[in-house]
Structure formats: structure tokens, C-alpha cells
Amino acid sequence: MSEIRTICWIMPFGCHDKRLYILRVDRSSITGDGGKTMEDRKVVTIEDRIPTLKAQRKQRANRRLVVYLSIFFFLILLIIYFQSSLSHIRNVEVSGNNYVSDREIIQLSELDNSVSFWNLNTEKVEVKVEESKEIANVTVSRQFPATAKVKVVENARVAYLKKGSQYFPILQSGAILDALPKGDTPVSAPILMQWNESTELSDMAGELRKVNLSIINRISEIHYTPDGDKAFNLTLYMTDGYEVKTSIADFSEKMNSYPLIVEKLEDKAKGVLYLNEGSWLEPYEEVPTNDEENKETS
Image (tube, rainbow, N blue to C red):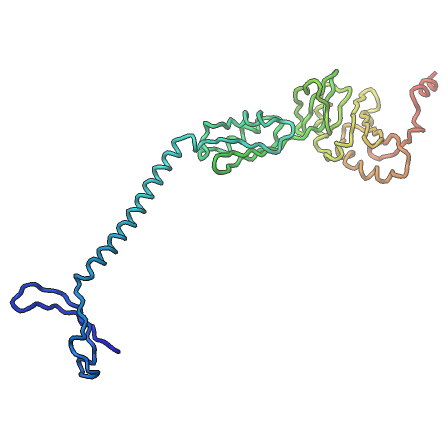
């Protein structure tokens, strides 16, 4: 049933108290329909609603206070975090290294618990680590909450120079490292025999770094024989049983074609493979021994 809601000020006669009333009037009582009287009208004063309004206003104020206090304490905790050791690096993870130890890389990086996690300059750290001759590339990153990650790519060891009983690693960059500790043996790289630290050795290191690593791993020894024919002043002993005669000039180009050449020789007996402008195989049974050569000369 429809109603008429009227808001009006009612001031009783002879009184100065002015009150606001909300009258809910049944339309039928006005028109006379339905038989309802003025007693059915509902009168609600604004004073009755004030407690509810105050409670709502208090709730909103409490919510704002909670938000402001939360922000305040969060900022306090943030300041404490940045001023304390909690914001410093507590762990350094090194990966990608085979020859250089974790400890050596961490020392080069100068990363410790005095370095702020958020102020970490990754580019500076990368430059410091790359000062090592054995490191080719470095990537430094952060991992929350307090870990620095150092991922390195080492220069491959393409050969070992033998001097007496010592072995000196030669890197793909051409750099020669200090001798291996006593008891350590060369791994996955050829041994250079009868070499001195000369121009030829530098040239050889430059050629070796251009040879595919899969082929480097198939070379056991490389002997330098400068007194012989310059076209074949190198003798290589391969892990698959072949002996290769070649030269320093264009060494990498010749050796990179080695797998294709050997593939064509699968049905033939092992022997000495000559690699120069062309290539040919001389089976071992046809190669004269030192005794036979001495007989021929006598």
C-alpha cells in the first residue's frame, strides 16, 4: 500500500523546542479509504537515529585509525630492516665453474655480509670476477630475501703445456696458467710436448681456440718437430688410433675437417694421416720404423 513520507518541523504551542519529525502517513488515511485513522501514522524523530549515526561514524574513524597505524608501523619496520644486517647479503651461490673454486670466485666478487642486498651493483661485481684469466663471462643476480647468484662461463682449457713433470693449462683465450698442483693430471685436452714458450706456442694456442671442443677432446698429444718439414712440423696422436701430421698454419681449419676425413677411412687400416693442402693416409704397416730408416741410410 502506498505511503506518503513527510518530514516536518513541529513546535508545540507555547514551547520553544523545535523538533524534526518524520511522518509516515498512509495515503488511504488521507483520502479516507481503508478505514485507517491518524493513529496508524508512524512518527520517527531524528534523535532516535543519532546513536546509529554516531556508531557508524565511530566505526569509520576506527578503520581509518587502523589503516594509519598499519602504515606507520610498516614504515618503522622498513627503516629497521634497511638499517640492520637483515638487508645485507647472507648467501652467495656460484654456478657454472669447473676449474675455478667457489671460494676464489667469491673472493674476486668481494661479496660478503657487509654488502647491502638492495645496493648491490651487479655490473661492478661482474667486472671484478672477469679479471680472472679463467673466466670468460659472468652474470650476477639477486634472489630475495638475501642471496646473490654468480653464474660464470669459464675459458675452456684447450691444451696443457708439459715442462718436465709439470703441466701448464692453456686457455682458449691463449693465456697460460700456473702449473697444476702435484698429483693433478690433465683432463679432456691434449698435452703439448717438446714446446717452448715461443711465438710458435702463442700461434698454436690461437689456433687451438678455433678448433671445435669435440675435436680437441679427441687429441691426446701434440708434438712440435721444428727440425722436420715445415709443412708437417706437428705430430698429433689421436684417441681413435690415428697419427696426424700437419702444421701450425691453418691448423684449426684442417683439424675441424678431421671427423669427415676419418669417416671416409672407416674401412681402411689405421695409420698416419697427412693433413695439408690435401690429405692422404699411410697405413702403419707401410710406415718405415727407425731401424728400417737406419738400414736405408747405412
